[in-house]
Length: 122
Image 1 (cartoon, rainbow, N blue to C red):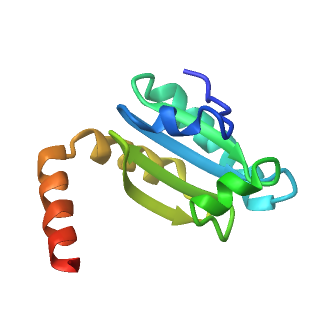
Image 2: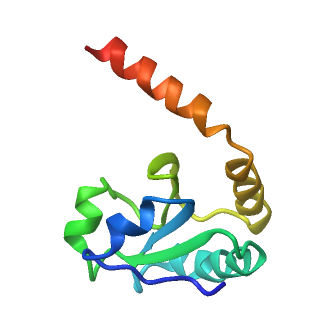
Image 3: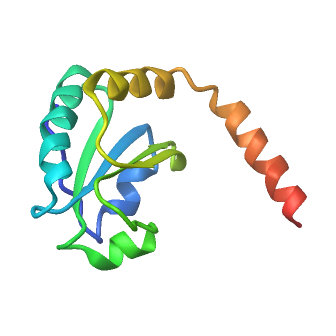
């Protein structure tokens, strides 16, 4: 599946359901240019997952709202919950391993842990 290019208007709705990988990037960024084709190849290998690229330079308000401080940054959401975030390019094999692990997540367990953590913060 080709990668999507969300904007501020549709980004929140994109994250609500399923697995979504987001590559925060900018055209002037060397590591972004290296990571981009890797991201695209893994997207092609995982058609059931949404892969999206957000140009942080074109959407600075969106990048700030998600706390992007370095690019490239990879964020992975499942059912609207951020389950992974890391700055820097990564090898194709590592990205595929992440895709496999996120697919195998027990989301009930994730929600229970989040609820427990939230109660501890109160």
